[in-house]
Structure formats: structure tokens, C-alpha cells
Length: 120
Image 1 (spheres, helix red, strand yellow):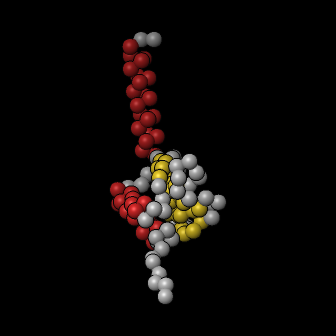
Image 2 (cartoon, rainbow, N blue to C red):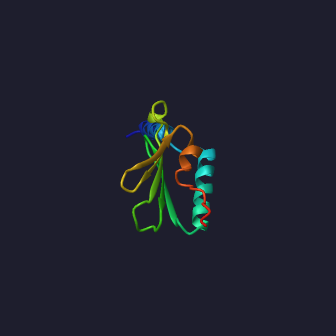
């Protein structure tokens, strides 16, 4: 294989890598700030202990764990293909039950951030 062929192959591989990175769904800075603020409060309360972020081709997922060796308690999912219909954001439980779905992340996160109630 000549040097020109090798350079062309490497350049083609770089273009494919850039395209795949550009088509991945991810959370932007404001979305991550909102999610991590909620996560930080719940960690301080002792409810949650670990998280994982997955940026896939068609969805971005923020998984929340009580312990790192378990299944996630909740998954915050961003699916742009549902943006016009039900909303791009959803919160699901371990069993797949959708707690809340909507167009605005802050409103969807309210399903996980229940206010304290005064008990008499």
C-alpha cells in the first residue's frame, strides 16, 4: 500500500469518526447543570450515590443509582425523535414505567424532586 493510499484511508477514518460524533445525542451544558443540581441535592440527602451518562446515537441517558452494583433507580432520557410528539425528555423507573415526559427538562425533573411536606 502506498503512502498516498494510507493517508487517504486515515483521512476517511477521521471523517467517519467526526460524523459519528456529530450525530450522537448529548445533553448540553444547561441540561447537565439542571440534572447535576438535582443529583447533588439527592446525594446530600443520602438517597442517591452514583450515576452514569451514556451518549448513544439516538438517545442520551443519565442513569441514577442507589448503589453502583444495582440497576439504575431512575433514567433521565433525552430522545430528540420524540421532541415534536410527547417531548424529548422523560424520567423512567427501573421497571420501565415512565414517571413523566415532556418538552421542558426542568418540569420533567420535578417528578424526582418532590417537595417536603409538613406533618403534624
